[in-house]
Image 1 (cartoon, rainbow, N blue to C red):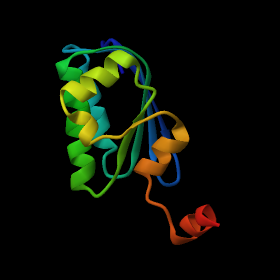
Image 2 (cartoon, one colour):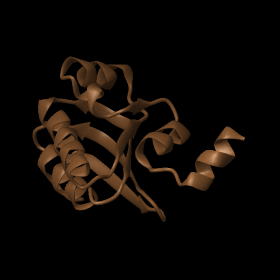
Image 3 (cartoon, rainbow, N blue to C red):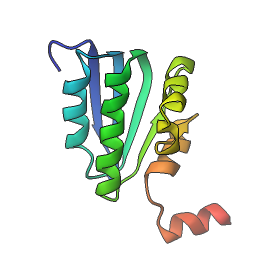
Length: 125
């Protein structure tokens, strides 16, 4: 992405997309990030924000729009790597009620990617 304070790395997996963000999610960068995130919202997304050093309301709005689009498409969205300031923003805005804030990539995958019957059986065994 050019001319934004956020760098985005997208990794397409068989059953989901991982998006890694670094930088500042603010009024200047959020619109471009939102546009890119919405492009991937047809399938489950794991959003890694460990490298995000700042979030403002526009940044949160970008995540909220992505969550809504994922829900509309029947896909999951989970966030991993949220720093304490970001967790607080998610909580204050109520976004943590719609988007799971996960402690690990494994937890995020469990929340975002639907499991097959075989995977659930293996897990229960």
